[in-house]
Length: 546
Image (tube, rainbow, N blue to C red):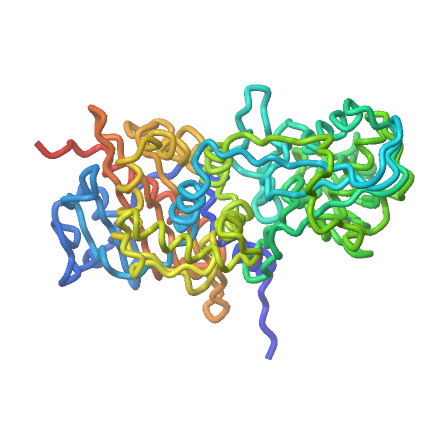
């Protein structure tokens, strides 16, 4: 039997990014449309008002829309300290969290490391030094620094765009930050030169023994990370139809080579660019078409071996800084040469990162999946373990300390993308309430996307009264319903804080499981996402209780 699915690649691409709800790429939404179907009934165990009773009529109207006919809504809004509930629907029921799980997975390493923790990545001289010549190796000891200076602004903050380049292969409109992705590597090279070394008769090695990559975490964190372990590929139309498209790419590190056969087609024609990689990912080729009136198109290719890539990047940076290395930068990373430890070895360079709170802000603002998973590994490292899975007991202990009922959470990763991940509204609100009692309350709150202002909520509600007054993480789980040729919305969620005025910030959660779309058009998912953003806005607009 033949079945036609012309949109299957698009839908499968959407599935790959389902854990992050990218409001920022979407047009602002409105809460309109109604259906005679009744609103959801309250849970027998629900606290507060329950069901749709007491809700802003505009919220009840959203919940009655046809796409939610078979869906389950969850809602919880409490006072600043986590109680009492102003609105509550199924607060103790498991929901698919999507990327609202990052509220938990980021909180763990934030607490474990501290908001001011900085990653110090050293380079040691291993061998004999004679004047300006080192006979031996330079060893860069990777420390799990998420950006290695590649997003650091002059003021020390970490740059991000509302739609991050890590989502470029799934959503159009992703953009790059202007910072040099090799900035930290260049700084290390300059320090090596400043130490007096001008020649290395040996090798450069990246020591990635901090933790073992865990393929159960997708994307898989590595101790050495440059440019999110991605090559950025930017295609721009040529001067006229029929001309070769222009190509730019970064970071340019041996032995990676990029070529393109993309052609410019007439204005209004389809833009379709395919990226293929061979030779272990080091030969990248772009093919397809780009319309003459199209904006630059960003795509990415994975860095197959981050340690070998980091080695080559440092060797080329050393060359630019005036340090000659006799080894071949295109060669393998010779880990067999690493010493047992670095006791007594001279440290000739070190790159110091921005504080962890800046990385947490990046992860939460753009729903950075690699950074969220990395936090699990960093918690494991804090115990002396090299196994990322050992980060979960650390997270569990923190949740107990924070007063979060971890029996109401199921997490198998940091990003919220595992099919088994679950969270109740109550657990997420407890997590949010915890931060209100800490010295980092404002820092954590402002690390979240802000409605109508930045991050994944930048384009929502830009002209409504709640603009700038909702601080919230979004999440989604979306996949194909091939049986009905439509999209299945496992979950759309949002959780954070409502600025109620006078310094009061109410923790809240709103989410829907089991919605469906009329067809395979991703704009139908956009509409559901916008509905959740508008529910948050309407909750914020309600006057606080007297």
